[in-house]
Length: 160
Image (tube, rainbow, N blue to C red; front, side, top):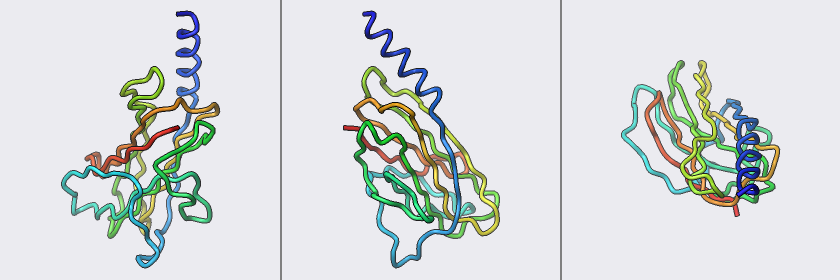
């Protein structure tokens, strides 16, 4: 029991210290865009906000592009990257990410973090990260992508 309490408290402190950050930019050209590597559950699009054309999880994001797209991470991958590309978004469109531990160690459907970014004129890519200084617990996770506060898609991933 004592070990479980210490583990829970340690993980809770780590998750509280985990951060979510955003960067934005231009998407890759249509010819080099790759389909999402994760299963997607979509809701009806909000046409006034443009459309999410692609959402990917990756191990890294360098020089404005996704590096090593994946739906499977290692516990030592201290940062999860989410890149969301949009077509024809209007200035003021809000893109959000809500991260969950679905079934990871002692965590069942726990919200880890969330972030919302409001696009400026000419922006059509959002890069979001979820960071943990310690190793992630093994298990299942998800990130929900929102467009103007409405669920657009859910990307499921795992740490193994």
